[in-house]
Length: 64
Image: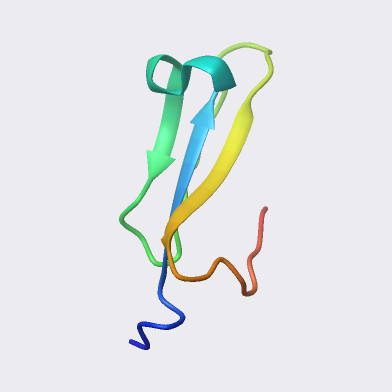
């Protein structure tokens, strides 16, 4: 792995961006690529946070 282009992605699905730890509904930080699947029991507003650690966040991604 080239250390100049290393990027470790993480996904979080939350219902309140002001309280991520308290409202995290699903998350992934161990896949390659990262993947989550969530079925809502009721309507609402949900926020998908794509974050990561590494020297670059450039590159292709797909959100389905």
